[in-house]
Image 1 (cartoon, rainbow, N blue to C red):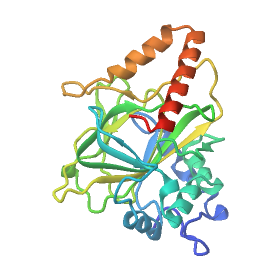
Image 2 (image 1 turned 90 degrees about the horizontal axis):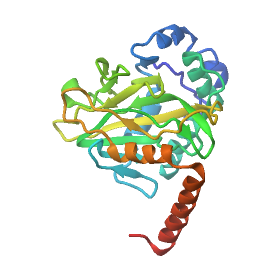
Image 3 (image 1 turned 30 degrees about the vertical axis):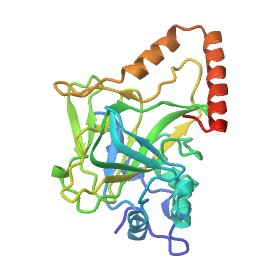
Length: 287
């Protein structure tokens, strides 16, 4: 039996009356999570929905997908919901609905959560054979909506996945001194956690499936209207595990250092020039 109840009227929607109190019984476990508030819930979605995602996972990149292949995130692709088949689009839009948000609020205790209609960084995620995602703290500012990022929800889509296949989600202490949690990304396991600049997470162990299968998941992010000018906007911050070959992202750190020491007026002029250049490249096809 799944944690979220099946809706016989519309399988891709969640019934508010059926879920409005769901998650309150997990709140204490969530906030006491170590090294930061989190929880893992097995058999999270009804079987028909998890099967829908597994059977219709994209076979190749589409116009809305983004692929990454660098030291910190190797062989990773994200797929935007707007390019998926209709039932999958409806499901992702349901993840942004009041009933689903109510469940997240009940579990986390964070009220006033706001979904992301743009799905920035969200959607389906895939890491192919040999790929990994180094330890990091997520970007904290949704600039188009001027919102503060608060909650990550990950739902895994990997059938019969074993520890030796790699790709386990790892949670580490803020100072990167110790791994505290290691969570195997098995199908229909949901992991939810509070995301801050202290919530270090990733799957740094390379994917090593004997049949070459990729690591797949649903990624959903939620925000609150608590952003203000006293907070520093950060992109994803990667950190190296001790005694490993992990590499720091010096390009991002250098860019943020320059931003910190450059007067705001000059930064605004630079941003305008960069925008005009990008628009010109887009119109002419770019390089």
